[in-house]
Amino acid sequence: MSESRAASHRPGLEGRIGIIDIGSNSIRLVVYEQARRAPVPVFNEKVPCGLGRDLERTGALPPDGVASALDNLQRFVTLARNMKVVRLDLLATAAVRDASDGEAFVAEVERRTGEKVQIISGNREAQLSGLGVVCGMPGADGVMGDLGGGSLELMALDHGKLGQSVTLPLGPLRLQALNGKRTAKEVIDGALSGVKWLQAYRGRTFFPVGGAWRAFARLHMEQVGYPLHVIHEYRISGREGRELAAMLSQQSLKSLEKIVGVSRRRLETLPISLQVLERVLAILQPKALCFSAFGLREGFFYNNLSAAEQKRDPLIAYAEDEGQRWRRFELMPEEIHDWTSPLFKDETAQEARLRRAASLLSDIGWADHPDYRGEQALLRVLRMPAPGIDHRERAMLALALMWRYKSGVRGEDAAMTLNLIEDEWAAVAQRIGTSLRLAYNLSGGAPGLLPRTALHRGKGIVRLVVPPALRNQLGDVTERRLEAVAEAFDSKAEIVIDELPEKK
Image (cartoon, rainbow, N blue to C red; front, top):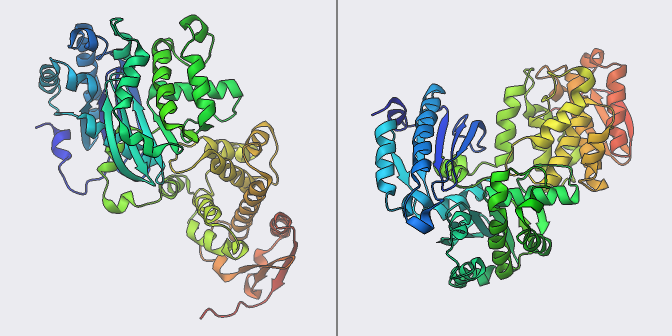
């Protein structure tokens, strides 16, 4: 038994986790830093092998694809071992499970690498892809669709719970190999017509998963000039999605090549992939499409976490892990959060969650040049690979962290970010950021000082109470920071030198 395989059975072991996804289109190695609620990849590489390319015509894996896959799987396993993964899983999907020589291929992979390959059934693939969406969007409600090279998996999602599922042989590699007796539309409609439970999910959200449909999201971003190129939780209306998918599915490769941001290899299968999407949308008539960057691999990762880890809020989990990595002071985020809380007694649950994340990430920009800390903090948060956060929430959190380091939000990036949210949320970001800025100035990053002072917000007043023993902690900068907080709340600033009442 290999060292990495033996390590995977040690209970409670922490360390890097590797997953090799042997798909119909490509094989991919992803290595995650740790088995934590928010999967953070430290390595991600794919190689297009086209194992499902000839499956519809020959029923077998293509010899050149097999040769390429075997060579690259050996390389991936070696890379994973060199990265000292404590667990490595090899997952094979549609092409391998359906090919007449799939088991022989698996046996050869295991002989060469010394690692066991799990052949994932269609039902299991749908479940894992559904779990991937839930990993990134815990309350997902509607239908998940994962289009791979060889198959389409559909999974019902009921507020984060898995429902009915189906796997269909509608991958673009198979549909492109049709012999002309039936059109692709006839094959797609024939397969979808047998999935009766889809009708019960009409009008809800559709969650597209898979490389082809993520490419579609990028195309839509280009078309509308959307400024934030983050696929996860990118949303468009159901009607708009169906109309664009129908239009692009009829375009020639030459026309599609004019579109930037999508590889030629992806463009070759894009029209047929969008034909599948359009037919799915025709049945579901969803109110919106919400794209997921998480799929089968993240679902497998999530499924192997403990029940307690699964229950953690993914955004807060990410912020806790990343915030700890960036922290330079002994001052803990919880102390900052609790000290500023009296200012936010009327906040919503959503705002409270984002304020907590901001506290956890509140020193994310310290290592940058002072002149650029605000801009870098904004961009870092705006683009961070955090699950459990939509684009509107990203924008608000990013602006809050910019206010944390700057006395204002200015520049092209800030203007772009402001366009993603309404004025009310921009005001909340300012309040959060300025209060964090005050906390660091008053405490100097030292623990224990903030609880000896107090913030209060009354009618038209933001008051800082400081005991006489800490009077020397105050200065002109502190007064300006307090005035910035008060301004964010449309209030006046006041400093009171007095003993704090004893806590009961």
